[in-house]
Image (cartoon, rainbow, N blue to C red):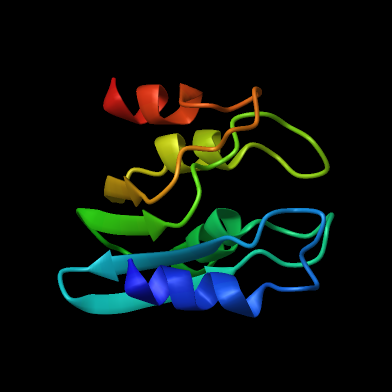
Length: 113
């Protein structure tokens, strides 16, 4: 999670008004992707991280993200749906539940089911 937090700091100030989010995908102890949210309208951190591992064969990956992934389609598609549909992400660790009422725990419930 510390690597994800370090990534989130890199997002500022360009990501605003979006929150500065960092995301890291790990296979056992090796970091496969580490990214942060880009300027508004570009991919969120989670989508960029998934894109970096796309097309490669992995099993049981862990994702560390500093803010609960979005569950609604705005300027970009919902990150939570992309994560849920990715068969490689086995565990997800979120450091903060998103207070936005369009999220606010809904993605976490989606991952738990």
